[in-house]
Amino acid sequence: MKFRAIMGALCAAGLMCGVSAVQAAESIEVLHWWTSGGESKAVGVLKDDMTKEGYTWKDFAVAGGAGAAAMTALKTQVISGNAPSAAQIKGPLIQEWAAQGVLVPIDASAGDWKKNLPPEIDKIMHADGHYVAAPFSVHRVNWLYINKAALDKAGGKAPTTWPEFFALADKMKAAGIQPIAMGGQPWQDLTLWEDVVLSQGSEFYKKALVDLDEKTLTSDKMISVFDTVRKIQGYFDAGRTGRDWNLATAMVINGKAGMQFMGDWAKGEFANAGKKSGVDYVCAAVPGTEKSYTFNVDSFVFFQQKGQKSATPGQLALAKTIMSPGFQEQFSLYKGSIPVRLGVSMDKFDDCAKKSYADEQVAIKSGGYVPSLAHGMAQPDAAAGAISDVVTKFMNSQEDSKTAVAALAKAAKTK
Ligand code: BGC
Image 1: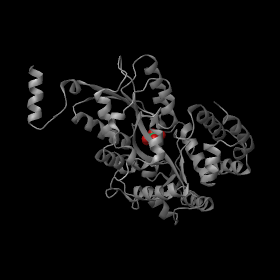
Image 2: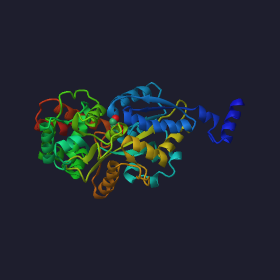
Image 3: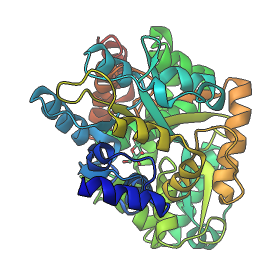
């Protein structure tokens, strides 16, 4: 009685109105891998919004870029009957989890989503005709970040072709600047490799990494992709083994290195360090990929809670908040992405985000809008993992490009 009276008083005071005692007590456990400076700030917005709505946020953060460690932790939790309320899952993995019968639909929160999402992204959020995932934002993967002072010192402009890129890297080297900051995990290798695949054209990328077309995978063009990656490696520093992506970004932020190939979550790190695009750093499409856009859409799925087959009030509120315009804007401002929800104003965003948005519109129309393999958007886990192994083996050995291409075609058949 007393608790209800307190809730009633809060409601009368305009606080926590409409939140029942049961909802107020609901604790939502959220598994994600957003642990870098910019990422933490972005997920903090969701935590704050949910706390304001009267829910208790239980953070289940598993460090490790691109989520490999988080996915292992998630499997353990689900198998042991302790599935979190929500988890960061994206791309075809959404359907793979849905097929296990462990997710709950969230249609009740998704009334206006269809008209507010690009169709290719709306589709990914579904399983068996129901919404089972809520999308956060769109990350573009094919970016090159350049320290502005290093660029000026090398007397260069942002490169648009590989020859221009190598010329700039040479100039940086000659000026005593470490040309490329590279991290040392398989997903970072795969991110760079898919950038180079994309530089051969979005049709080539689609045939190779979406259709897994054998002829394309074994083509001379693919051999030249591996050759280019090998050449780029010549500009890495010796200390990359095991290095996290955000530490490589920090090298570019601090002027310890000139450039980094990374998706625009790196921009969240620049923003978090108080750096401004065009002033402290430059963002450019990876050479040869100006007209293409590798998309990576983060989303949460919602797990059945003990004894419950449908979504809890907390899960429904979480899904609704994620797609609300205010959250979409603030999250992306911190995260480096652009809102996935259509019609959210881009006024507060920086030039790089505005470029991302403009390039996305062009790429959607021209067919250059392609799913990122390295970030779980293009292939089921098994095939993506096998391809990743081939690329990482190549980049961490002296294997020749022809051998790698043969291994690639074999890996693509992994089911
Ligand atoms: C995720 C991003 C994240 C990045 C680094 C990507 O796969 O989509 O949200 O910031 O990995 O952890």
